[in-house]
Image (cartoon, rainbow, N blue to C red; front, side, top):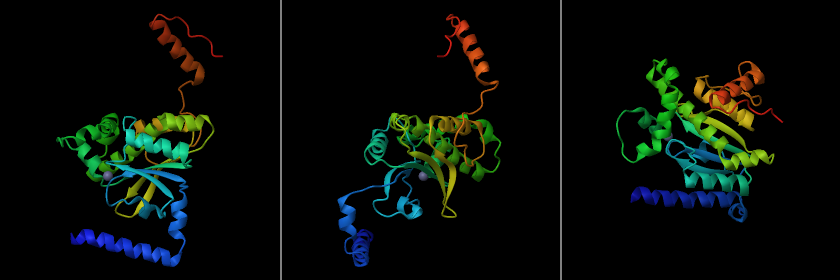
Length: 253
Ligand SMILES: [Zn+2]
């Protein structure tokens, strides 16, 4: 009970200090919220969204869950996303993972944990899809770190595929998507992918999240290369159509 009372005590001290600095602080905050950012992060207590981003009340719309997943089946996350983009008109959506993530570690382990195993399955998929790269990382810690990064890329890609983001981009609105990893040892937010602003950029992201390309700034524009260009892609499409008995594909308008 003593620890709980401390929270209430700290709250009173904080509120008093804020009011002393600006008597209108809470009146202004209560009247409206106009956050520029939607932050999607892990529930981990060591990664407090406002603290690590240096933001104040009203600046960050926040959704957190175990291992910062963005799943279309998650009604909570999808509702938060829709409200943030379509009502609050946030300009940036940030997925933030973190090293030493217990959720990712549990997904890496070969033992059952119960209900949470259902939740963590998408991370196991990330591990399976990137097995070739991950098997090449001998150091266990580096492997762990890399899975955290790949998970952020995967969730960022999920985000880009949601109807909310697709609709916003189609209307020319620009929630930029960013993927960060919080380095829990240094207190630093590392940029894994930033400025994803279009379907083309999301396609690049799709290539990176599965190909083992090391983390780094992604290209902002340009689709990932098709071998041989468009003619080659058309030839492949024709071959598939022939095999399926549909004949040649119609010419592109
Ligand atoms: Zn975590």
